[in-house]
Length: 290
Ligand code: PDD
Image (cartoon, rainbow, N blue to C red; front, side, top):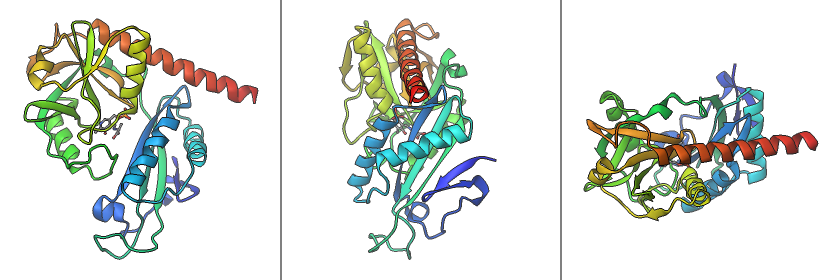
């Protein structure tokens, strides 16, 4: 059975319970992070923890653990559960209290985390996936990685019913992001992605891909684009911690490019994987020599 972590203790999954009065459950009053595990090691977890701190701060929630404490818990979950490739999920809620919309005084946050396996380096979706276009009906603070995600739940269910792997969300025809990913196009040799604002999540993978593109001398333009421009683009792809870089080869019925993963997408995915191998390989070597 899987070992999870709840409020400071490692517990078997069937003993990891929270109160029915938890505000995460009652109001979606919580934040979360998802970091990849690659070669058994955490990938960019430090950056995810910086974003966690920001999400907590924006919602005036105290930060219950230091980044160092989180890193230890996250790596222990990956190791104890023998995750070679996969992810660690962590969540912090405002805690349990009598139901009241405004923050109760003196409330203790709830914190938990778990790990699971997922194919990353040989994700079958690397052969190309379909996205389904839906209107973005979310709130005005999509930069906060909040657990209140009904709009994405409905978007991704609509995608699944349409036979697509991910939702492509738009506002008045302009792409915001994926249901749980950032969206990119390649046009005339350059990458385009929406600039950061409260309309989208500042993806950690998005940041890393900008760095990888720079190393590969591929220009990056942070500019919004429409669904029609994505359909007409040379290439289209998505990024997230648990997908890395995946080619979008169809947008509903429309074929992107020639319908196969494009060469720039492939270079970015390969560059991303090479960096991941370098980082996790290095840290494994460091811990062996410690
Ligand atoms: N989601 N945009 C949204 C709305 C997301 O939920 C995510 C990640 C991203 C990509 O961010 P990052 O590169 O930091 O993973 C963009 C995670 C993976 C999830 O909810 O499972």
